Image 1: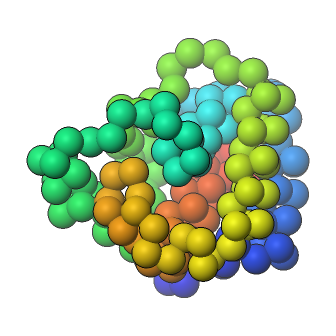
Image 2: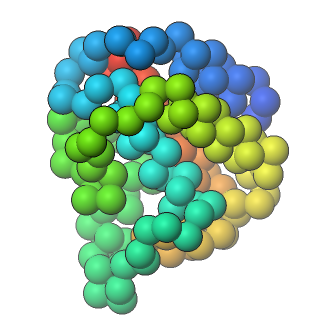
Length: 152
């Protein structure tokens, strides 16, 4: 499966439109996260890309992630509902809906403005160097999965 190109203006704007359909009381179709927690969860991908607030995995953990997790994250198969997530992505505390939504939209805008060539062969936090297509898949697939979880 090929995913829409998150680096293009049209696709990025369509994702933002979906995000803007969410309300603070939007209920999930599956799972336990609130909508604010889901937005915070989605922000972790971008925090790992742009911020230095999550520890990088050591050599052994990075090897395990590249060997066993990378294909699930950057490959074409959609995520399954209620699948396990990495500890850094677990959001257990209450979050501010507006703040998390605004952060996610800002990250999407930055990603789209930087463009796919910025990401081609760029090192990811957990998986080593990724192609622009792998970055696109990772970004788009994760957002699409969780926006679908909340019916948008």
